[in-house]
Image (cartoon, rainbow, N blue to C red; front, top):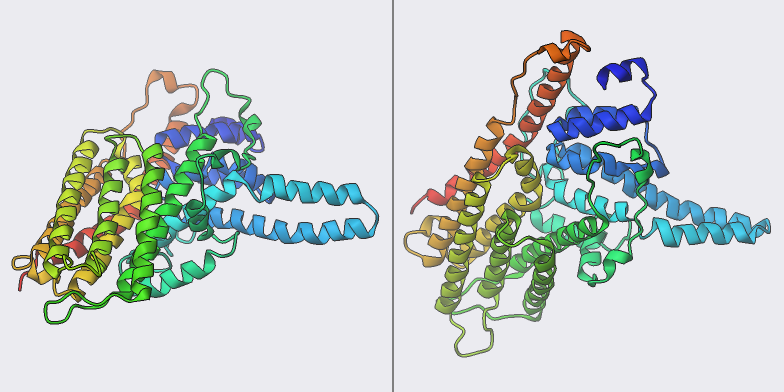
Length: 469
């Protein structure tokens, strides 16, 4: 295919076929380069971005995924404004049918676009994984500078989460902003799959005969995007609930206020709806399902510790601590189950790239957010041997660190693959094989270099839970 593209560089079928092969091999960087050579622009992004966007996630190219998704969001935002102007001009010139045609296109195709919804979820998931030194800005041999989680945007468990959560809540009110997926998830029903318009152009794959590449179905895209919306909605609510929490005084539970009660109730209701959504979208006994249990348990912990059974005689500080310990112990079991499932699976490099934004970063953020809350209640990291809640959270953090170590180990085998030149490859020659192999290995190296720094940072940060008084 590379040889054919050299002889016919403007053939879109060759480029799409080559992209499909490189994606199957896990060489997402080379697939992205070919996609960019195709010059997909304007409305074509809504119909053709499905060729590359999911593979940017499984290839660890999170910054490129955010850029492409942001371009799709800007396309829809500008189209919404332009259609209003052009429809008005059409009415002024007497072309009523044209004005109706444009407004119908906007309402039926553009605003409920499936790709628009999916892009919102991608931006929210990958925001904390933005890398300013992405491959498009540096030479292939240049080393990546220090990269940290949440340097640019996104929630990452740091002090900046409070300001960012408030901004996300503000931005979610605009339909064409990525945080709007939080509102879409909160208001979704079981019939919403049919609401979105699938504008993907599948006819461009008509050249496929012997083997047809499988793409995400409409149902998969909708459920995945809505679950992302639920996840980030819970993160925002958890951060804001912890920010409003009051410290206990003289061993007594803190008094609840209307604001605290509202934020905790919002977190509880959102968690109930998100759990209902996850039941239909996550496979039983899968890694995603185990990780969701960890995430939801941490949400429950925050609610229990902040408000407990406020207003009742049975509500005590010890009761809240014991309830939190039980939830954290269950979360540890779920982490261990996910670790076992991961180590018994195949194609683990691509799975690591997918788990990082979907599960790993949200859980890490929730652990750090819970740690801030525990510190407020006098259950800080260094009291893990004297306070049951601090010890339970430390056990969860260290179990999660062990999982991160396994993910890093899996990425070491993702870097390069050995190859050889056989007699069957004489048609394209050894140079052609070497060129493809170099592209493949370079793409794999780029994937690893863009995933490992984040995993390593979280693993090192979680070491702080081993410290004692």
